[in-house]
Image 1 (cartoon, rainbow, N blue to C red):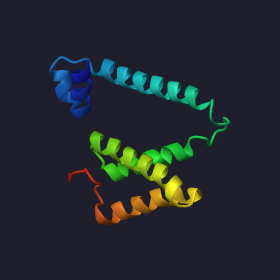
Image 2 (cartoon, helix red, strand yellow; image 1 turned 30 degrees about the horizontal axis):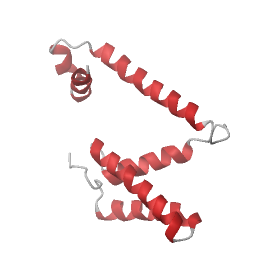
Image 3 (tube, rainbow, N blue to C red; image 1 turned 90 degrees about the horizontal axis):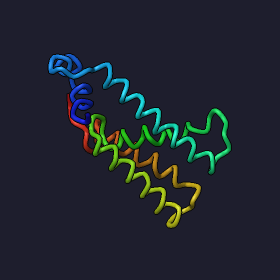
Length: 124
């Protein structure tokens, strides 16, 4: 199923020609994504008051992680997330804790200026 999902993501028409039910793969991918979001939302209710804008910072940091890691690179996004976590952890101890988000966005701006495709992104 994993290879079928990957094949469908890479080229839907070729996957269909190979006999993969692409509609089923899309349904499976969306279902897995929705399940992960549901579990994450349930776990976050223990730490945050629920209101419509609660997830904006999470989405912003996810976008920053993907941009730092490089678009098109799953490993890059993972490393980008680890870099953000490291900056936030170390920034809270070393400097002023309120400035740790400023450090994250400073690294984001530096990466975008020096490597517009991200650390592990590739050119189209």
